[in-house]
Every structure is written in C-alpha cells, then in structure tokens.
Amino acid sequence: MPATRSHGMDQPFYPWSPIVSRPPLRWPDNARVALAVIVNLEHWDWEVPAGTPLPVTPNGGPEGLWSGNQPAFPDIGGYGHHEYGNRVGVFRIFDVLDKYGIKPTLALDKAVADHYPALIKEGLKRGGEFIAHGLSRRRIIHVGMSEEEERQYIRDSIDAVTKATGTRPIGWSGPDFQETPNTPNLLAEEGIRYVCDWGNDEQPYRMTPRTGELYSLGVHGHLDDNYIHLHGRRTINEVNLLWRDWFDGLYADGATNGRLMVLHLHPWIMGQPWRIRHLDEVLGHICARQGVWTATGAEIIDWFKTQTEQPA
Image 1 (spheres, rainbow, N blue to C red):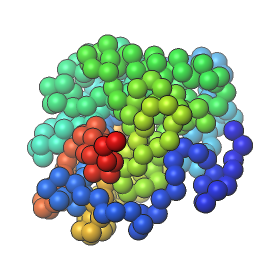
Image 2: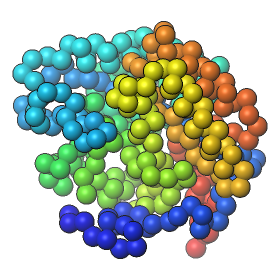
Image 3: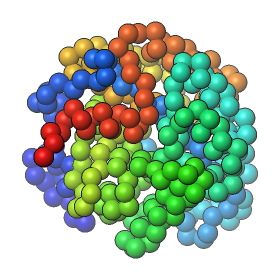
Image 4: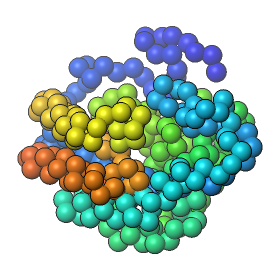
C-alpha cells in the first residue's frame, strides 16, 4: 500500500493524537502508571522451510550473514538458547512475578501451544492472560504473504492458543513485531481486540480497522530485553538502570496524565541466573511506589475503554 501523508500520518491505522491534547487518563485508584509484564513463550525452530524470511533487527536488516534466507543447516545455538528459556529460565521469571503479585501476560506461539502443556499449566495456575504470538519465533508475518495466507497464519495462531488454554485470545503480539499493511484489519476481523506491535505511545489508543475494534497496547521495542541488551549491547547493569529510569520518568508524568509501561521479557534472556536479580530489583523498585497498577493486557484495555469512550 503506498504511503500517504496527512496531518503527520503516513498510514490509516489510527488517528494522530499528541498526548498533550488528550483528556487526562486515570487508572484505577488514580494510579500513575499501569504496568503490564509480557513473557514470551516462543519456539525457535530447528529448521524452517526454504525461503522463509529472516527475523529482522531493530534497524530492519537480517540477523545473520544470509541475505534474506535461512542457512541450510540447523541453528543449534538459537534453538538451545530459546529451549533453555522454556526449560529453565521461565520458572525463575515466574518466581519473581509471584513475589510481587504480578499476573503475567503470556505471548504464546503455536509451536509452544501445541507441544509444551507444562508451560500452559504454569500460566493458568497464575491466572495469566494468554495472547497469540504467531506460529514460531522464526516464522514471521511478512509482505510476501497474500492476504489469505496471512489470514490463515493468524487463524492458526489463535486456534492453537484457544485449544491449549481453553480461552480464545483477544491480544496479539507479532513475532519480531512484524506486520503487513493487512495485519491490523485481519486481526480485528478475527476477534483480536488489542495488538502489542506499535510502540509509538505511552498510553493505549484505539485503532481504526475496517471492521471490529482494535486497540494498541504498545511494546517499546528498543526497551525490551532482547533489543536493549543483546542488540543494543547494553550491559545488564545498564538495563537495570535504564528500566528504573524509564519507570521513574513515566511515574513523574503520570501524576497529571496516566502512563503505560509494558515490560517485555524473554525467558532465555532474563531467566538466566546472572540476570534474574536485575529483574527482581527493577520490579522491587516499581512496586515499592504508591500509584502503580499491575494488570494484564486485557485488564488495561478494558479499563482504558471505559475511561475514554462514552456509551452510544
């Protein structure tokens, strides 16, 4: 779809809205910051079909040395890292979230939904919300898909989460935050009510799909643990400080207009024994302050809708 410019926008998926022109947003009990913690439950494929596009870096380029295609051998390193997260690291993260009484929002891809019932059980035990997260970490939405191919991709992901958890998901987080010009419309058509791919605001906002309703619960991609620590080459001590400073800035501004913080975690990264204390320290810093509402993505969107939209 060709880009067009109108009042600062170059696409039609939501209206432009500077935060200073909006009515103040109030969270429950007049909290300053709503905190959602998304834990990614995702599988790194041993191999993928020929021609599968590579995941991309924050700068838009391929992650490896292969120009636009996967290598012709199993990626044992990537597989091992991600499998460690599902075998070991995620349980450390769950323990820290339990310590602070935080219900996780669990981004569940089809491969994990189909093959890791123990992880589903752990999430359900904690009252977590499961959202759809594509087919797998290495099989992403891409512009080479037809609209019908992408629709089936989305349906397969949603159906797998529904079957595994017993509840149809209403949230979506695309692998590697990737979308096509069709994605918001297709998500809304399939009953998805919020999407995490658009990291362009400090509050949720309503999007404008051609049918249905869709909201943004944006993940700040450059502050997720993968991009800030591994791609951004920040040490874990720097990540600890940056996350706390991020919260402190939102908390200060939230005194007059509520803010949203989405902490986006990967068990194979933050679940490592030398990193987990940093997550503990960050959440301890956040939860020690009055005026913080910890909630799942669906709870945040439901509240936002009641505060910003009047009944017809």
